[in-house]
Image (cartoon, rainbow, N blue to C red):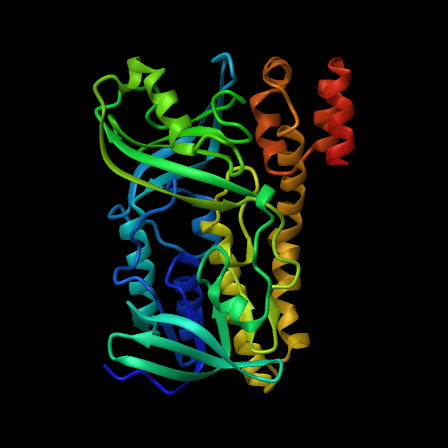
Length: 397
């Protein structure tokens, strides 16, 4: 198969963000190529696999039951002592099959006109001075230089593409969580139409255990914890499972995966002349739950539309491509920075503090504060616990 020598847009990475960017770029009439380093799009899975219908609407994704496995109508949050807070929501979500979803996203990009090459690793960008002019890629057909007017880097945490261009994507060690997950079958749990989240410093320091049902007795059971802990995420998750024989006593593991999750601030400058960086590569994730599918697809659409405007104007300068970052910050980035404040507040709380909050805060307000909203209302409600309220005022306002 012939690798094109010159294109309008190179997208590096065929995850949801990269494929959505490629679909958008190709739909706008741009000659677009995608390079994915793995031989199969969507594997291995490193994700809890939850996606809200709101994100589907924002990113123009049509629901398909081939990948939408279990409808979700809210969450059940458990305090360190096991106290339940049921949070119903009208904004439905789905537990999806990422292998099928990611492949469908790539198929949609291909149908829009993008050319996709798997098992093709971009190892370096081509630069002239401070301008990115294309990429160097190793493929099953040989190594090639591909010239591009714009490169969109969507190649994951600590992006090789961005680093090659001179953008520092290294995460602060304190701002990286360690995640581990099993897919398990023959689980016994209540509320299979809700996600289940377990909090507590003994359960998951700075994080939580999740159970994302994919059917009546099958679920993704995972954990995210602070990456610098002396115990591994797997050790904490195994302890949680062993401590709940009523749920997992007869369960079997059919898949496991793990990885690092950036939970700090988004990159402050994910662009330069000829290059835009999106998704995990630009740390565009929710700092509380580490989810990044929706935000990466949204950023991919913005990047593709900015590329179209830049190419039409004959101006792919850093100054022009900054439009991508400014638009994304206005739509999503500012909210994520507020969510980061919330995460930093919660990580300073003891289990005793979390129990007090569970008694004072309504499910609706908990959902709002987790989304970076209603900080002043939250502080007013928890004023009965002055120490926690003072900390909240310091961290959230």
